[in-house]
Image (cartoon, rainbow, N blue to C red; front, side):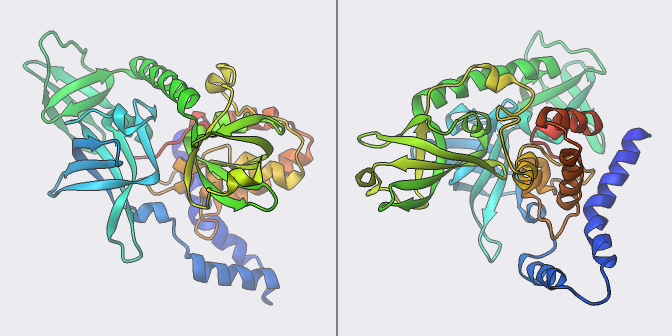
Length: 394
């Protein structure tokens, strides 16, 4: 019953809060009202994520050098697709690389579209176990004879072939990775946690050697400064950087830089770097590049809360930082809520009342003198663990 009430309240906030707020405005429109109308006219009043084409497919081939995957889409179509430069790759409940995926496995893909809504590339690809974990939709074992029978809510039971000696008790919740009509891997929640820790360790090693992936946002050769937007996956390593830290940009030869400013930008992290002007000459906005830093302590990866808690920030800056550090926990289902997957700061405030509502809630907590850790603990107690991880509701 409590869960149902929370979902209803979440839906009411997401779908009605913004409209209700507008209804309370006086009859005479203020400049702020007019601006809101203009913004809605241009930006629209729907979350873009709901319009993203999402498909299951068989991964037939991977070209890691060119960043292409060859897919057999369920429902028809065998084609090669490029991954967009900053595409998210999900492996074993964590981020990964194309080389971490297994050919012939079933995968889940999101397509990037152009203005005419034609598919032009892939913006997210996940193995099947990651998809089930993201959606909170593990399978339940119905029975195991010559084949494994599994089921989940609103989904007919399915039969899969399994290897000899495969054992799972009826009623067990499991995450499956399939290859055709065969189960290649099955793990319970504890097993998935172990796989995720292995994937975290592998990615940590990769970040140490290759650097953190990001996109150059701005280069000003004359001032010797540049902006670098680091990807979603780097959130903890990036936000644990401090002003004055020395870093290196992967180039030939490598480029030395100094961190001048660090701030969250929705699910990403924006860095202002000081670089020798001549070293900036070959860099340009939009270019993909990796930033190498001294690896932070291992607990940065395992801590429950962000690494940059309680840094000195102005009130509004704290609110923006908090919104960019938590994920929406509303009850909107069906792979629609941007804030579920890309932090609450990424929701379209013209389509959803939750970001504006949370700004008010966070502002009240700050005005009461609550520290960042206290705010996180209070939010976690009210909203649950989904507050701190990317997820989507089935």
